[in-house]
Amino acid sequence: MTTDKIKDIFNQIYLSIHSLEYHFGNKRVEKQIETFISHAPNSAGEDWLYDFIVFQFSHYDGQRSRFDRIHINWILGAKALKRYKERTEEQVYYANQFKQKIGVRKDFVKLSAKKYLEKERKRFDTEARQIIHCRDLALFSDESALCHDCLFHLSCKNYEL
Image (cartoon, rainbow, N blue to C red; front, side):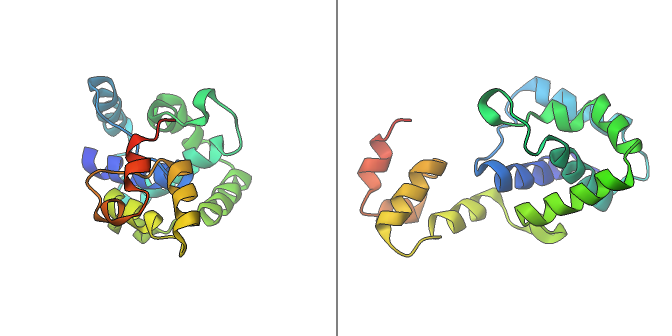
């Protein structure tokens, strides 16, 4: 289990829920991930990690929080490990329902965050619907070829939430 694999799986599920990438950019988050790795079972592989992270996200499904975002320490903390170790059959059932609801599969990790965002930018056939979708999900990127070719490029570039 590597830090990059944890970030990849966490980010893909986070993207599926919030349509935004999670920013791992500080030392506290890196330390949180390292601590999680040291406390995870030695036999934990990619399948275990995937099931663990989905289970943790399902726990917070429907709960309201500040800014309606899930924080990485909620998913990878000591309480999360304890919750997973003590999970019930009912919780596993709801985690599987949650997995279907957000539409992720174990092969989802092959889709990078950049490719996911490009896919979302192309989601609607008319530009009027596309601009609403892009603005609602804050999909604009100056680096995206799709954004540069869009009629609303300057509007999105100057758009402030």
